[in-house]
Image 1 (cartoon, rainbow, N blue to C red):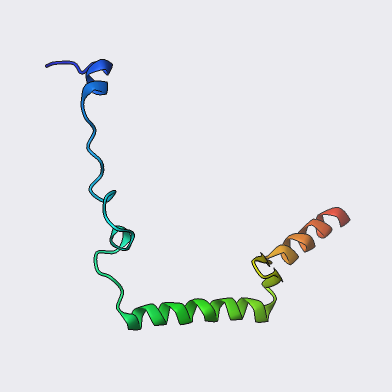
Image 2 (spheres, helix red, strand yellow):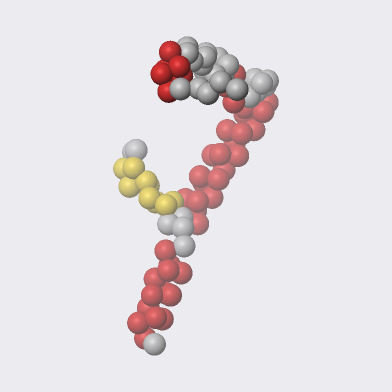
Length: 85
């Protein structure tokens, strides 16, 4: 059995992955989304953001800046309880 040396590996041309040269919409999905599916995903995404804003989990700071509050209150309560013990 022939051993492969590092120099041989460097000389061998590398083949790119078959997904590299595909357009972006074909890299992840084999079938493009239909308009109804695209609209449903958009509505679900907007509804989730609206829910986060209404519940106080999402705070809009500036037009392109926002802050997520996911569980910080519980962490603060836990740390305060640890200080009291």
